[in-house]
Image (cartoon, rainbow, N blue to C red; front, side):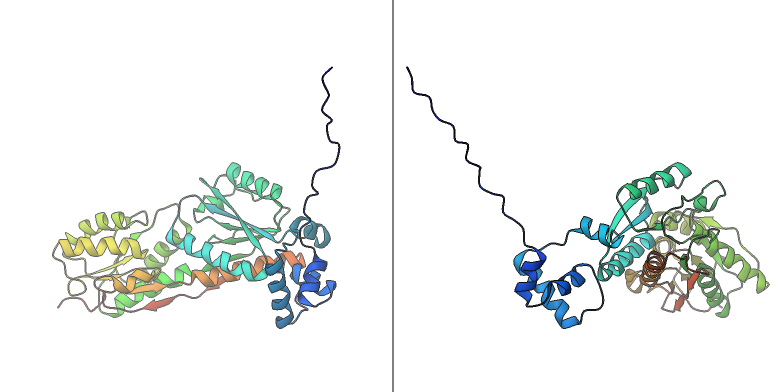
Length: 348
């Protein structure tokens, strides 16, 4: 009879336990309570001790348990950002600023793009973020369908809105779009131009609408004729196509483009059409993107601080998360006229 092979009932090797807070405390030479304060983002730890604890965590590979921490503190240390799936220069820069502002506060970001700012998409994004367990939400959608009466933002989470009409019971943070457009238009009028033409952003954009209305109001206050608006889509190509039309009209001596990228296309169209900038036509943009100083000629433009908008939005949201009370009036951050070589008095 063949011998049966005995099967071993001995347990396998025990799973290796990960480093604990006690291990970190021993490594850093501090109390377990101090390690807990650092792991939970408390501020009552001096900088040198905090750095020593963080170094110890890195050396031994300790990672705080965020789920357990959320149960203890009632916070998940996570912020949701609902953003338009259509990327724009401003949204990209603002999102970078939000990310830079949340990291020092010990928060992470969960990004939720929406293709269209409809009630269904916005509600769906909120529901998904609730399932992801975030402490609050920043909304970064420039299309002003978000401001229509049928769009209702769900309640239950702290919310801050960027780039909107402020028709919400939520804190709103934005650059002062109207003031920037007024500065651009007034600068060209102050040089002696009889009027200023405008290449506007897409009609569904809240910021484009604000800039267009302010351009028109500035001309009307000065008693100047208001030329017909040319509409672009923020792209250099749309600025180029509008520029070809403007270049063909010898009465055009000054143009305010609603962003620097459309201004870039406008400059190309003017150059190709033999209209020198600024000797024949002056051009002002909006944004002060890094490349604007290197256009030919270097572009006069309106500087808006996306970094400041991101910082203020995070500050307002974290205050709401901590206190449970919403911020007060909308925050409008100032813009700045940056004068370079693309503007001059009109030709004699």
